[in-house]
Length: 344
Image (cartoon, rainbow, N blue to C red; front, side):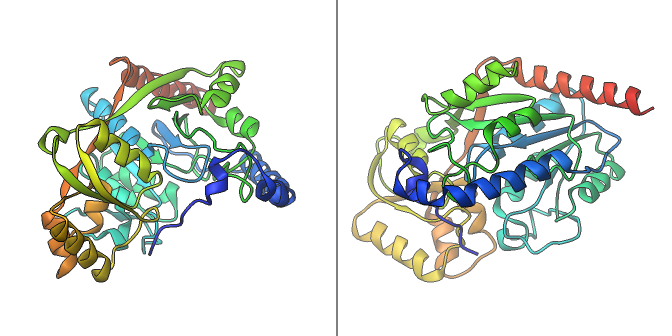
């Protein structure tokens, strides 16, 4: 299943298109607000952290979930991760098996999350969370699920891309917002501003007005030194491909050619062969993201060859202050303990 491209006008100054679509956005926003406010979430007998974002598209939720799962492990907790699994086939809760599962079956992000902590995919987040608790987990991280509120969370950390922010500030379909900003802020516990840029400033100001804490983090390439100084053909299907290409350039790569696909894009054999041929003809090294690489695993033919030839650049999230991840986890546990006292 190929990913969907966000319309370019979502990340430009509001114009004719966003104006024309604003009546539909108003209806969408009213429905989204009603759903968030009137949701009757299921409760789990464990602390639940939700990592959400305000908009459609990548904001860094997966590396945030990984960083917080690692921090929970350091604090002797047993984290388990709940994910819908974008484009996956599982309706009932399914424990991700990184040796056997494919991205088309469970989604690409769960395959990355499962390397760090047990990860359950399925439509029923509460059911997935309960199964993780039954198997010995004692701390649940929910990747997304902020707007649906089907599972009660003790803390909602909102991942915000500092470079893209909330685009034109309009709601779907006039812009990328999933619900009105002020309504989303009511349900948020804190904002995590990722990267550099001032596009997220309206959200940061709204968070300050609402008294919500602000944390800062950066996405850092792990083994970029291995490709520094090389001429590369970079390819990716993520929410913001330009961010990946910029990361390569800032790591000392010369990006001779680049190919951007839709978010969560499942590569075809023909596309894989085209990339291999172009890299061969122009003497460029193939480079991609970890998320793209997992979509090429358990494949054969040109797809397997592309996976074998491509240099993978993993990205990790680093908090500006090393203690911030632990601070967030302490706040989640405190909120959970207060909830337990209230509900008896």
